[in-house]
Length: 432
Image (tube, rainbow, N blue to C red; front, side):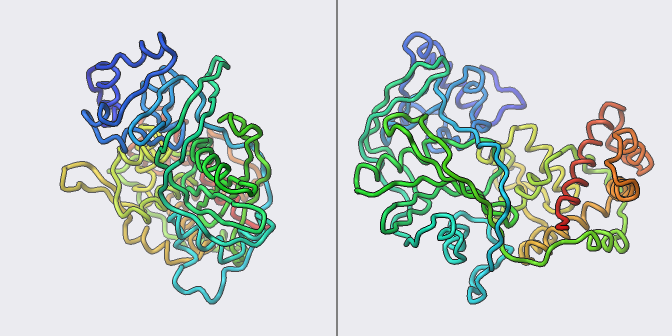
């Protein structure tokens, strides 16, 4: 298999493994393929080749053949066409506000980006007690053995694949024990539409076998000051896919609300910058993903294209779009590491955001967006007419703004959708 320019190191290595061991044919003939860490390590470290927290991060060949991978022991993995992921339910909930504990000085409200810090502050602030509806204490966390158990996982043809796990390694971000329950937390600071069921199921099976209490698996996400908790249960402990949502709730810390006058004030003082000749005009419709890139970099210091693509629910194309969007707003900078790979890191502007409260940070994002003429004109049009501008109007705003990176009418129309999306993100901040 020849390496294409769009392939990551992950795709290249899995391509070599599929070629050498005829993995797709073995799965067609036998229903599964057991691969060892030793076999994987011939081309790349196994830990880099087997961790796919989201469906989107699977290698190209896995997507092509609708495959997934699960660990069975510390050195063996099963690959088959089973459904390893669960889509988040499309349920909207109100965001509850809780006070940030005033006596806590070692955690900055605007700088909660790591999983461990998010779990600590969710416990200290009372988020967990409110969601769990019972007092609990942190009792287990970190890497541990899964123990031994059997289970079935549903394949795409609705048949079941029987699996046996024996002391596979797993990790629990936080386990909180109450009088009646053990609540197991999986925490992520990444936007996604789905998650790997294994991250809840293996810990659930371990502790369900060990203690005589209700085991409550909870998946928590945190982004831009919003903590969202999903509690699940398994209706049949022996079936991997028997996962159902129990409840969902979002939380944020009490802060002064953003009003329309705050946005109008930014429009009145922000200086319009010239459009860059070095960075393309953004094609990145989700501003939450722009924020997510910054939060990842605040936690990781620097990160490569491949690392973003392989670990954070971005496709190869999305990685380019969203890193360019961050460069456009001067939130990040690009350089090379010692190995000569392109890496990204927060600019001084980007770093300063994480010394701010959530409100202050969102107003600064708004200021950076509105310092660009097309976005400013689009928002003014929106406010004047009380209706979203037509795409044709956005294209005209772009054309009079001397954007050098857009040439064709088709490209103008695609970039216009980003302008609309970012303006709607700004308006979505207004609490009135």
